[in-house]
Length: 221
Length: 258
View 1 (cartoon, each protein chain N blue to C red):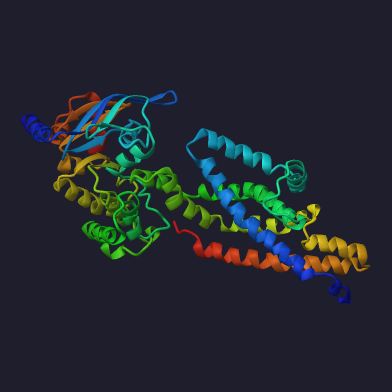
View 2: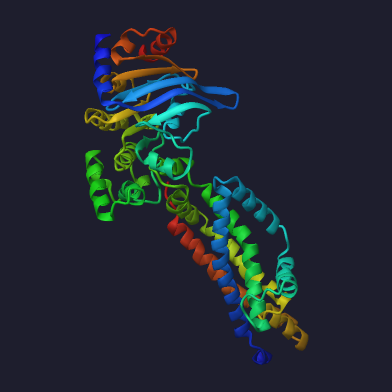
C-alpha cells in the first residue's frame, strides 16, 4: 500500500521542512526580540517603527510575503542572498520571508511576557544604576522569556506548518512533494494522511516539551 | 529650638548632599509638587510625613529621577541631576532606593540580587561582590537565606534584602519610599531596626513613612507635606509635641490619638 512512497524523497522533504523551521525560528527569535525591545524602549522613533512593523507585517498573508521575496527581492532587485543556484536562493529567500513574518508574532508573545514583569522590578533595576539595555537584558527579558515559553511554543508550531508556504517559490519541502505525489498517484487520502502524520510528529513533541519547560522555568512570585 | 540649630550647624559643617530648589511637578491637572525647597546635609536623617496624596512619595522618587520634574533643580553632592543616559545611571548608583513593594528581582536568588549591581555597574569582580553581599546580608539578618529566591522569603526578610541590595552599591544617600507600608505588623520592627542601625552608622537618609515612632527616634528633622507643599519642617520632638501649622496639628490628631 505504501509502495509508491519509495519513488519520492519524503524524508529529504521533511528534512528541508525541519531546516526551514529551525533557521526561521532562530532568526525570528532574534529579530522578534529586537522588535520587542524597540517597542518597550524609550526612543520614540524606534517605538514607532516597532509598532508599525508588527501591525503591517502580521496583517499581510504569508504567501504574499514569500512571493514578494522571490518576485520582488530576487527577480526585480536581483538579490541572491549570497547563493548561485536557484534551489539555494529560494531556500534562503523562504527563510528570510518566514523570519520577517514570524518575528512580528514573536515580538507580541514576548511583549505579553514583558507585561508580566512588575514595573517595580524595572524601577529597582534602574535605581541601582543599570542602563536601559542592562535592565532589559538582566532583569526584564529573562523573566519575560520564562513566562512566554508557552505562547512562543504556539508561534513555533504555527511556523512549522507555515513552512509549507515555501512551496509557492519551489522549495522542495514536504508540501511540494505532497503536490507532486497528488499529481502522480491515485492515493489522495493516504498521501494527505502521511503528510499530516509527518507534521504531527514534528509539532506534537514541540508543544508537549515546551509546555513542560514553561512550567519548569516559571518565575515564582 | 536650640537643639534644632545645634543639630543643623553640626551637619552644615559636613556639607549639603541633596538640594532641591523650587521643584514643581504636575500629573496632568494635578500639581503634585509645588515650589519644593529642601536641603539635606551629609549624615542627616530626614523623615517625610503627610497625608496620602500629599506628594511625599513623588518627592522621594524625583531625587533619583524615577519621576521627572517640570521645573526647578535637584543637585546631588553638587552635581545637577542628569537628564538621561549613562550619567543618570551613574548617579542612580550613588543613590540607594528602597521601595514599598520590595521589588526584588524574582528570577534571581537573594545573593544574586545583592551582587548584580556591584558586578554590572560597579564592575567589582564576582568573588569580591559575593563577599560584600554576604556581609551585608548578615548585617541585615538574612545571611541564612542567601541562596533562596525572593518568593520564598517573608515580606520583612525581602525588604531587608532590598536594603542590602541598595547598600551594596555604596550609596551616598538612601531613599526609603514607605518601606514598611506593605508589611504585616509583626515584620515592621525588624525592618525599622535595620534602618535605625543605618541611621546610627551615619548614613544620609530620606525616609517617607507613616511610622511616627521611627520619626521620633531616628530622625534629625521631620518634613511635613500636604497638598504638594512642604508645610512644616522641624526637629521631631518639636514637631510632635508642638506643631506650628494647623494642617500638621490636624494630621497628628488623626494619627496619634486612638
